[in-house]
Image (cartoon, rainbow, N blue to C red):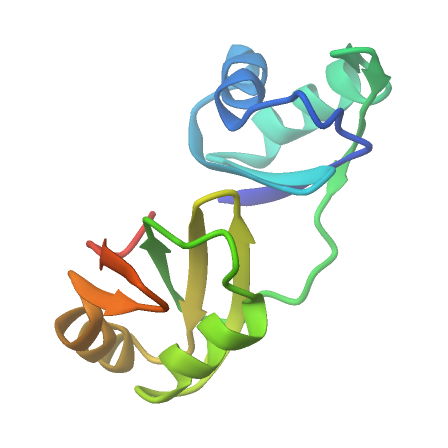
Length: 149
């Protein structure tokens, strides 16, 4: 698996558009957008190389994208998709709620859902058990569902 960083995205760009564009160059395991950048996880380095060659500075929704290998330090974690997030919820509040179950490596709210990366899989499973379909800040039914891929 190879993780690509995609920068300078238009606010109009969706994860579905990005996935469709990158899937022309190989199998996409994951595709997420956070604000004006995103990450695409491709199956092989050869596919990722081709995507970078073809899509770096490619104009999508009026913006030339920056496409490169992600330089972030990969930390093993279990990624949870959290749905039904209230509009007033902050990253810090959500992180604090999940930290009741164990260390949180990363927490990103995207519109009305979020991704929470927990350092230990067993803590993530406890968070799912403890938080799924519970009230949080007045939003009933927010859920952690299954770990995201």
